Image (cartoon, rainbow, N blue to C red):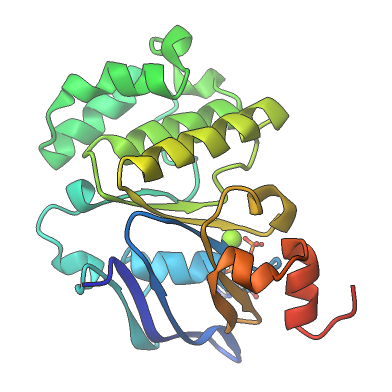
Length: 234
Ligand SMILES: Nc1ncnc2c1ncn2[C@@H]1O[C@H](COP(=O)(O)OP(=O)(O)OP(=O)(O)O)[C@@H](O)[C@H]1O
Ligand SMILES: [Mg+2]
């Protein structure tokens, strides 16, 4: 069974097809980059996948099911969509404890995960005082609370400095080496070029290319390959 599958997914906002008949699969145990320029429909597709937006037609499935049919969703799939969802008045630790309580997840992972994302020094700091990069790290820790096999990350490098981006690359690689499946979106093609095994490239809501990243790049950079695939000379 495929881990994540988009089957003819379409999301229409009035006259705009934000996602236009997208069909693509994500292979297990690999890092798949979900790539495309601003407004290509990446976030909308991921929101449909996670049950935060309703498809106009088609489907987005996790392990063969729509998100809302998963029995224990946080143990199946962890997501970082934006890092703004935390209670600013609570500390990082308290925020994660709240998520565990709400989802019925054992909270013994809270502190080790905060250490893992290198927020050990700030566990008792209110998230009101967190920088964007710190919130992204906290969101990653939150996504991992249920020890899910699948991670869906929308622009997780947003707000990270170059050291943070290098750290994230290593972090995602380690998770993939543990057998986790990662779907990670970005409009910064150069940034993800060295992180991904596979790519799904979209533009104007439509699939442009999908498959093994090296094969699709064919000796070019991801950015050159993208421009070639959408028919713009590099
Ligand atoms: N709630 C909404 N109502 C109307 N239009 C929307 C809505 N959400 C997204 N759109 C439009 O759908 C298109 C796709 O947006 P989306 O956010 O999915 O793109 P994206 O690929 O994530 O872009 P970025 O790289 O900038 O994050 C855009 O034209 C956007 O303006
Ligand atoms: Mg987006």
